[in-house]
Every structure is written in C-alpha cells, then in structure tokens.
Length: 371
Image (cartoon, rainbow, N blue to C red):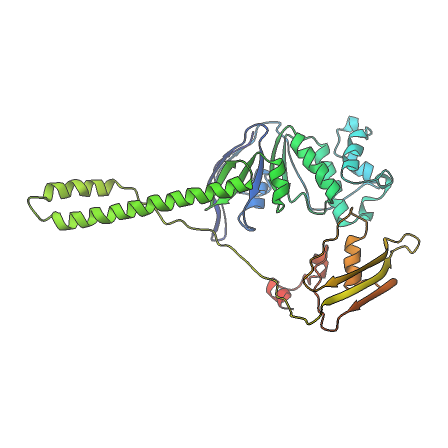
C-alpha cells in the first residue's frame, strides 16, 4: 500500500499542505473532499509522480500499479474496440471480451465498438479513457471527477464496479451521494494537513465540527485558567507570606501548552443574479424537433411551458439530445421544426457542456469574466 510521510507542498508563497501523513490499508476506498484549490488534484499528481513536492516521502510498493482517469483525449486507433485493447498485455490484445464488457457497462452499443473514437462526444471520449483505465486492472484507482458526463445507467454501473473493486480507491467528486455510496472512509485537507475519518462525508464533517467545538471549549477553559494564574502570581509574588505559593503557580503556568486559535479555511459563496419579470410563462416550446441528419431526428414533438420559478431537469441516456435541446432553445442551432415563443421581458444565460469552447484563450481570466 502507498504511504505518505511528512509531505509538504507549496506554490509560490502559498502552502497547500504541510506535514501530511497517510498510510492506506488494503481495500480502503476513500472519498477525498475539500474546496477547490485546496490541493486534492495536486496530491493525486504527487502520488503519480507527475508533481514534485517540497519535503517528505512517498512510498509505493514494487509492482504496485496505480491507475488514474486521464482527461486528456488522444486516440490512435480507428475503432473504439481496438483503441481500448491497446492497454491489454500484448498476448491478450485480441481478446476483446474484457473490453466489450466494460464498454457495454458504460453505455456503448455493439455498433459503437466499430466507430472511430474521435467521432464521439467529449463525454463518451472520457468514457473510452475510463474503460482503458479499468481494463488495466490496477491495484489502486485515483479517480478525479469520474462521474462527469455519465448518465444515470452508467453511474449505476460505475458504482457497482467501485464497490466490487478488490483494491484501493481515492475518489474526488462533487457528487457526494455517489461518493458516500462507494467509499469506506472520507479524507480532506484540513488546515494544511490531511484528516481521515472512517465513514461517509457526513460523518467526516460532523466529526470535524465536534472536534473543533471540543478544542474551542478546552482553549476557553485554558485561557481562563491562565488568566487566573497570571492574576494570582501578580498579586502574591511580592508578599513574603505568599511568595512560595506564587512561585509554585508560576511553574504551573510555565508548563501550560499554548493553544493557538483555530484557522478556518476561507470559504466562497455566490448567488445567481435574477432579473425580475412580470411574465407568468417565460417561454413556450411547441412541437420542437431537430436532427443533425434529417432522416434520424434526435427528438420530435417536444411541447412544454417554462413557467416563472420552475426548475426543470432534463434526464436521459447520453447521445439522446439533452444538450442539443438546450442549444436549440438557446438559439445556437437553426430552428428545424416547431415554435419557441419567449415573453418579451425574458433574458437568459446558457452554460453549455463544452463551455470552454466559448472562451477567448488570449484573454485573462478577469477580462473574460468582464466581457
């Protein structure tokens, strides 16, 4: 099992973590929590040998294989089946059963197996990388947001796979329900150190809250005792009759450990600004239909009204047109069939699945947000 000893890492003048210690046991499946920027992905890279660290030690047993999900999409083979088979041992590369079982579990059809990997959406290309990872049968999985782009059926399959996986797992995901359903422990970067708790994320946060309350009460009691001792010594050290007792109290005071104030990690919050509207119905969709190939429509006959205050979820398998429907409503695709009727006061914002394509790579972050 891997072991981290007194590990420290800083970027510039900012310390991500310091004096980090972790020793994994066989079969541990750990959910890794914490705010963005706290060092979760950096710790993954250190374990994988892709990032240096300032001090400490990372110990990995010989022949212990660590697998991670790559977000970088690069394919060399002409079919999905052949691309995924690349990770198999040379003498097994034509034994496709293992590959096909994984592909089917993650939502690919038999026809998909013969298609070019580059012909799929970004979400399905991530799945291809996930299949390649799982097919290597590593001892340990480092999974950074593996649930992104997975539909409900594929999420269920991945949940079952992780539960049955006979190895160690460290999982980063914003889907706490998914994480809590597959993990045995929860870990987080807490005040520049690692804190590991047996149980789910709710147990983790409640444990930290309880420990902080206990610390604060202990510190308050110690501060009161210190003040009382200091006042006693100040009043009695000059008197001959009480000087010996004052000296004894001073020794007690000198032996007291200093308890520092707890430093809480900064938290961020935001609210979506909402423009008031007199409309009871924001827009109506009537008999919407669209297909990139007119002979194979993605959806037809979609009719609904978006009322003020409504929050609508669109669910379904990947590739069935959910994102396309949003793009269609946002006016980013030509209207092929049906009618969209917006109230005159309506303004909307659209955050698409591939929103990164909308960014100007030459702009700074501040300039891009302000534009």
